[in-house]
Image (cartoon, rainbow, N blue to C red; front, side):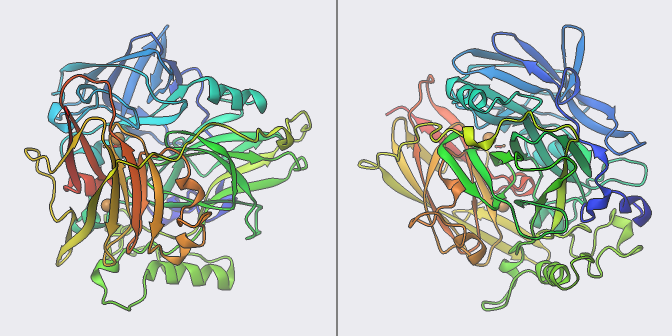
Length: 549
Ligand code: C2O
Ligand code: CU
Ligand code: CU
């Protein structure tokens, strides 16, 4: 995209945030689709949608119909304990696909494993009882070596599970799904001049993951939302291929962050709300947060943003002792010195324009770890009937510490194998082999996985299919993470609930506990992989088999 066009979409300039945020509604993109005891049909297909102002973009979407409504990438709503049934119709020409139900505890035959692809023109029915606790889950393709592209081009949606506890929180705060309880999917993409999506990863992009320069929230660039002065629940999903977010809330032109509360992580509610000023949200992760706007006057504004951080991207290429993150140094200094000019020489017109704004390092115009805004909230003129934060429940759920008395410990090492521009990311020294199963677990075992990311590496959000886990502790964390610790185990607020994806920084060791109990029939074949989708596609993934004891 030319500099002129990109200018109005530049997320580092809050003045640009004039597009009404797309809210999930009755139909169209992100429409709500009740899926409890009602079979749904999802057609994976090409569709033109209006993402950028005044332009159409060819994307891939899941198209669903219900009672004469057409929904694209519907927000599926399922009740805990009730059956779910979805038919995937592969309407893509010449490519296979699957649907993976990210975070859901289900029989592997319904998990969308890449060994069970659905060919072009073919259909497949996914059926399972919803066993997970109420919370924010999602679905996306898991095609063999083609997940990154299909997801980037548009295939992704929310899967909300409702249960008693989740309902209780919403009732206490008078929250209503779609109005004051809002799913927000965050993605970064690069668009060409004509509005089309650019996905042409270079060798370097494949190694580092593809980031885009346009930030979309619910497929809206530079969005704003008119809000009441009350409490809001945002269900945040990072569905980017590779970009990590450091989420904070601040008044315009003020750098002092405002506190907000985390109430749920990937797999349901925390024990109690946790006040934070920031959190890291990596690809695949979710956080449900409460924003308390009760003290705000009509006309006041607040911005959801991603703060600058050290992306620790190139640790694997640097000598020991060298300092990290050129991107970070540039944007960080620029931000603090002038408070204005955040590009600091990047993204000048003409610079690297041939690759849709990519520079020589393969990063987009919006560097990883650079500060930008996500959403401008404007408190409405006639405010005042809001529900205040004083009705905040003190407890949300039981999240017991796991029983580790019989647990065995498994070591998992993440490392890099670099040759020139190309880096292969390894799990325990190897890349994915569809025919091999390096991790075999007996059903019912509790395991502690000690995931160690080498110092010469980059951050990897590691995701396990079908089983939720607890984070036991972090060691060797970089300062930007260790300073967020809330307990002696080095855990951050994001580590205190049930998780299915955990970010492991270079030099860090993260211990997680997983209970491999399940009630499914026979041997189960799942996956453990990095959720930077280019890493997953290039083999930073292993089969995980759960066998009968
Ligand atoms: Cu959301 Cu196997 O991934
Ligand atoms: Cu998953
Ligand atoms: Cu990775």
